[in-house]
Length: 306
Ligand code: R1P
Image (cartoon, rainbow, N blue to C red; front, side):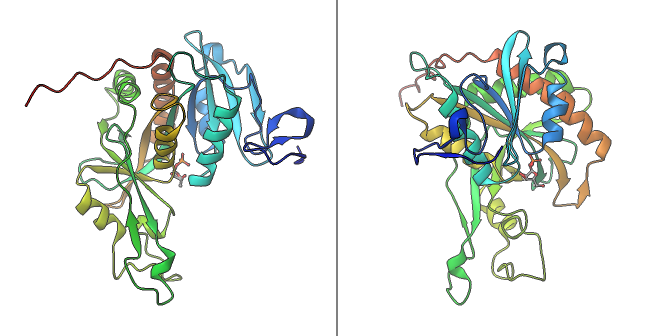
């Protein structure tokens, strides 16, 4: 569909269709439980495990998003493929929230699990493992001011943003139940990066990325020994979830990532193992979403007196 602009409101809609300008969704298209991933192929592989394999609603946007809605155990669930990077996650979450009904009684408007692929930067988290970001996420970005004679560190590392504890526990439980025999499922801290290349420490002689001065992977590992998965979207999802109004439960989110490459050893997962983890792992993540109530989670137990 061609862009047909309607006003300059916070979330622009396309002409008379009321579809959001980028994700292309409108009221009724999405369920409040959303699995989000990078590729449309993964979205379709996961949608095969909707109840009866039935996609009840499908929206492909002109800007590369694909939204598929069906059911899991009778509970409506959506899968949204975003493409890659922070900007695409931003479009996905903001435009999804814009078309979902407001939350009731302090509960969640959206429960979101990113189900992506990643590299592992942890020695004992091998390729073919799934890493659940129970420990939240940090972000590493290349600082343009350090280049062109600017000076200072070429990379900046953000503080950790937490993941939703109840949703993370549900994802971990369902993944272990599904894949216990066939793949390890580990917990850890996620690291999102602004680039697949520079800030993930991939050496490219065609560009000055300041790696002689600072190895981004080593810098993250020094600061966060539990850093496990490294990819490009989870931090922004968790950051926006933290900031979604009304805080703290309007958007609750976590992530699980298939480790396709083990950076310390250079080993990579086979295509067959990635395909299996995408379809079976995705089915497990849908079940975790379906099993998690939208109602606000019970308060965490008070700390014992000091
Ligand atoms: C890079 O190859 C892409 O793969 C990962 C990264 O975060 C990045 O988006 O995730 P997806 O497989 O979900 O796209």
